[in-house]
Image 1 (cartoon, rainbow, N blue to C red):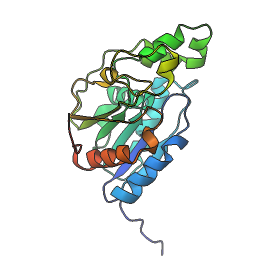
Image 2 (image 1 turned 180 degrees about the vertical axis):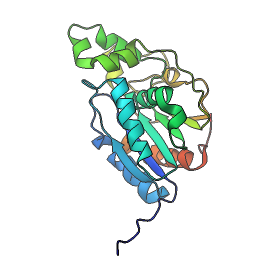
Image 3 (image 1 turned 90 degrees about the vertical axis):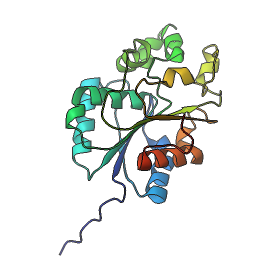
Length: 219
């Protein structure tokens, strides 16, 4: 007789990595969400250089439908934008759950715009990231589910190479670039863009929001 696989206590969580990444950098976050909060975690992978939004949305939705619910989505940087695109395309059919964006430049990324203007960098950036980060569409969250935003304020990262910023930032993305109209809650933490997946504070806030729809200190 085959043993029954227990249902996850708080549902499933799909993590979507950012530009030029593989998801390996989110391993500590996945482990903390699983061990400390009881989520069943799944890493969604795509190629930021060669994937397009339609195919990515189709595959992401298919994964969500295959998992025990509720199904939550967590996206880091570009990954969060692809989650938003998936909801624009297939939101009505997706299983219930919450959405969390970490350092996702929903209003476009100054760093990406500056890099794309350098000789040869547009090809390195990739067509899909260029559409999402440089030619960013106007984004408003209209889905009937909780959406949280985590933004970093430790200014160490690629943005310094691109000329720096004039406001709070995580070294790559400015806080104001993460302000999605229609969000449920937001928290800022003293972390870098690249360090979000490693941070215990981020993991705590992420698990808290996905569990309850609130952060420990909402903004």
